Image (cartoon, rainbow, N blue to C red):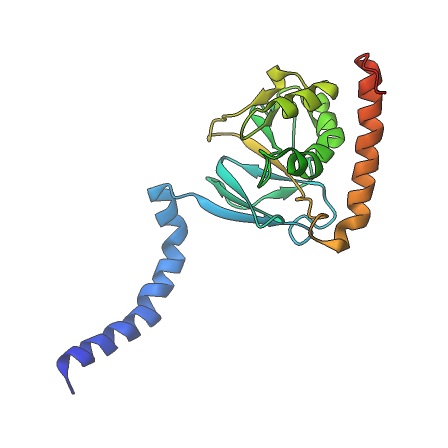
Amino acid sequence: MNPIKHLQRFYKSLNKRVIQPAYRYLKPLIRWIKNDPYEIELIAHKSFLNSDFALVYNVLNYEHYNFNTWKISALTSGYQLGLDKLTPKDEQIYIVLDTKFHDAFGHWFFESAIWLPKIKWVLDAHPNAKLYLREVKNFKSQILEYFGIMPSKICTQFSAHKNICIFPNPCTALNDIDDFAKFKCMIEDFSKEFAICTVDTGLVCL
């Protein structure tokens, strides 16, 4: 037998039987030593089940991918459903709102802003929480002000250490007919809250 082929065959067997199992076993330690981030995916319905929000700790960055998935890079693995784990002692709380096409008014309004009634409740219940935006635009600021969310409660940067990021269940109603019932309820809630906020701010709609 050709010595090179023999060595290749030996290495392949060694890699399969020893190296790869050892790597999987030592992967958490290697990740800790190298400080490599975890990659977390939150998929609408599948990950969120019946919950509106998920908590991810020590987030480095995120991407809203393919309309129904958050792809998150974090220093802490896993996530928690719901907001029950939040406490008054938690300081760096960020609510992620901007999705894939956040710079377009229609996308932002129907995919992000419809969460504002529930997000406003979170901001009121947790004074340390802030709304994280990829980018501040006039139409975002105006609608947020209607809901009583002032610039002091908005940020475009956050610290990667000891943060808690709240991710809403991605809204896919514009692309997924199965989500229409929930989307309709959210639009109705948004419309009611928007009308109340408009009256409170003294605006008159003709």
